[in-house]
Image 1 (cartoon, each protein chain N blue to C red):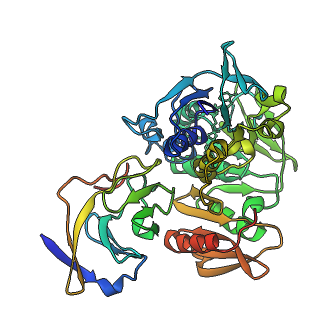
Image 2 (cartoon, chains in turn yellow, green):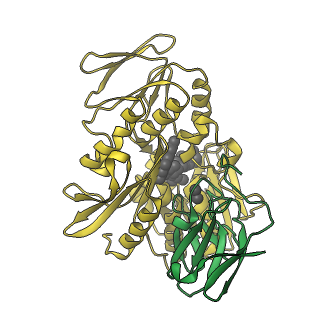
Image 3 (spheres, chains in turn orange, green):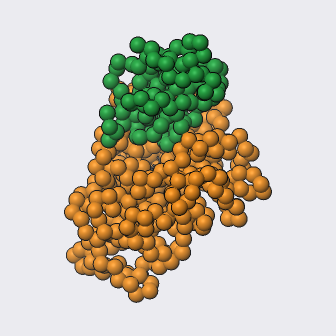
Length: 362
Length: 113
Ligand SMILES: Cc1cc2nc3c(=O)[nH]c(=O)nc-3n(C[C@H](O)[C@H](O)[C@H](O)COP(=O)(O)OP(=O)(O)OC[C@H]3O[C@@H](n4cnc5c(N)ncnc54)[C@H](O)[C@@H]3O)c2cc1C
Ligand code: FES
């Protein structure tokens, strides 16, 4: 293998470059990235970046002076792919042919098509939102998932009057289960943020700027700013010419990693590229750890690891949900399947380690 | 100047002790019986490395998985970008002694110096 093309220049793309070099690949590496920026870290965008504690420079994922010997083609978008010849077509008209291709195009925020509704995925989105948050007023956040909850928490810290609306009866139920989703979403109320659940948004009003959000029960929430955190869509349309992501990666020499695979977690995008690259180079893959993600809300560190499935039982093994500091273990057939910690990093790390030694499903 | 911190018997192998000096220091006792001291606060954000995941001579930050080499303080990969300070350790008569580094610490943005 002489040349590898990596499409997507964010966390997973960068981790793939590093893994290639660490796994002794000495050939040519081309990285194509649609954004004009070198890889930067997204998690702070909804947290300390909005409140100003973290700057653009802090977000950089590359080290100063780090030389990975890669050709970074930034501000360039891949528009098509031919898996047979492993040819990546670019919006510049150029075609890159490589012996190996890593697909790492991540995901984008699911949009709400209405004037003035913010979404948050990129640095440019975050700069626009940070600017909009400079005054204070009434913010409505649509979606009480992790990103919505973090935006609510940051805006609250900046002095905004915040309402979060969620169409599901319990926020985060998919990720944490109903019982824990309910407990974690109490953080909003603790900090003076209104949470309205089970109420889909039926309309947005305002012509030259947003004025209100309307809900299924007729409630009209006046708003000076609206942010939607309603999920992410994998960026895989450019693979349509190749029959889609699954068809593209069924060809030898083509692998995919990070959020474009449907994952939504930073740690997967950091760690999995080493496995993907090992497949490309035919080297031994590293040990995989159970999935792990975290969220920061209202000064509370939320950490989750493992696989949660409906029907798992949950038990608090330490601390007290009322004090928003506890550790909960999910069990299936008497075996721990997942673990959730609120402000319990030490214990959480122990349990996360135990999960790793427990048998994992593929 | 070496300062006595705690008996080594208080730190089982594979575990760490957080010494609440200013700034706090984490003392690790590896599975192989070696003892190391580094600044306790991660250089990325306000996390205690004593709470981290110790593997061989490396500790993985409990929050975002950057790994620090206990021997050199070097960090393997972002989000943390700066190395953590290391301190000299000696174990005498079963007691861990630490000599604090005179280098400036690499504290995370927003942390109090
Ligand atoms: C605001 C926010 C907060 C988050 N907080 C957390 C958190 O607290 N904890 C956690 O675990 N995870 C968090 N995440 C998720 C985490 O950031 C992602 O899992 C991670 O960024 C995925 O990395 P990736 O490289 O796979 O994809 P992405 O980061 O999405 O990067 C993909 C890159 O590919 C580029 N691209 C797309 N299409 C093309 C194309 N056709 N040609 C060329 N380039 C293309 C994109 O422009 C982008 O730069 C958060 C995400 C966001 C947005
Ligand atoms: S706080 Fe240590 S890596 Fe983020």
